[in-house]
Image (cartoon, rainbow, N blue to C red):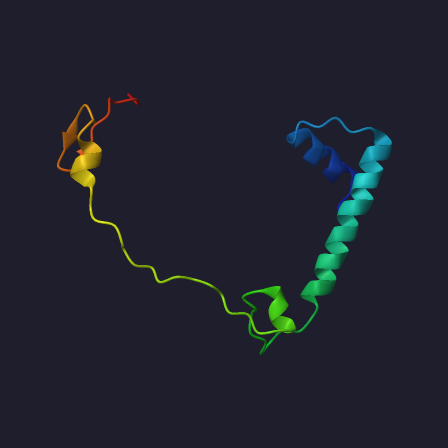
Length: 99
C-alpha cells in the first residue's frame, strides 16, 4: 500500500519537520520506492533456507571469534561499595526521587 501525500504531511508533522511542497513530493517518491523494494524482497521464497550469521558466508566460511562466557574476575562487591554512603544487604541505597 503506497503512501499518500497526506501521510507524508502527517509524518513530517509528527517529526516536527517543515517540508516544502517539492521536498514532500520527492520524499513521497523515495519512501514509496523503498516500500516497493521491500515488497519485492518479501516476495522471494525463502522456505528451507538457513539464516546467515554474516553476509560474507555466501562466499566463504566464517568463523566467529567469540570467547567463552566465563566469569574471570573475583567478586569485589565489598571493595566497590566501601565508599558508598549507604549500603544494605549488598545494594546501594539512594534517596527516593519519585513521590
